[in-house]
Image (cartoon, rainbow, N blue to C red; front, side, top):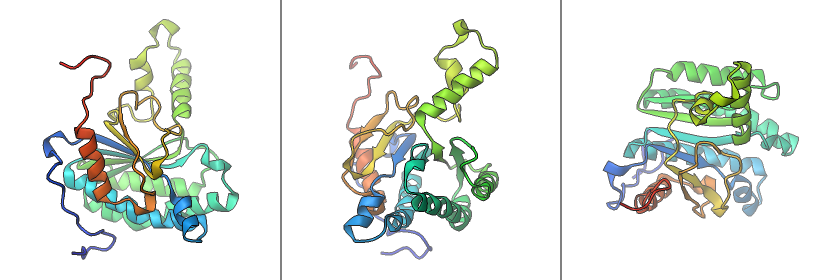
Length: 251
């Protein structure tokens, strides 16, 4: 049965195999496959990005349904500036308009919106303004924190953390994992329990390199525009069947 709320996907039941008492606290997604989805249909690559909006809302709704507290989405990487200029311009405008269309809906659902990445000269000021507005609007929400990794790179985040340590004059002997974590973009964000990369590609692509040291990785074949909450549920069921040892042995 279709939802009556605009932008909502069909409500698929949570599978019986999914244990709601062991839902990952933090799920991170690499939203891959937009270009291939469009090319397979004879469409411009930008149409794949546009189609990905429905997937994003479906995943957010599914995460809320099962109680995921943190959701991080790879929206635009530091390497994506190498793409054709027309596609980059489209992505800047699309992300701006996406925030304008969806932030009130997400706010009503109790989602806090945050942005991780570099705020440099390449990001248009109007996009930064919409980002700041969205973060300010939702800052008090606690049901789920949705972090958009925008102009983000895992190596860049570590470099920025080290630069901050140097700028503070921290002696080399005092630099440890805790010190670096305190200088990441969001020190309060827990490490992802589960990372999902769509499209069947089995690589990380410079995403949350520090944070995913012990994350469980799932690589579904589905292209991002076809991703729905049911695929999220399947990934969580897969996650729940694994034993996380964090370098130790089974008890």
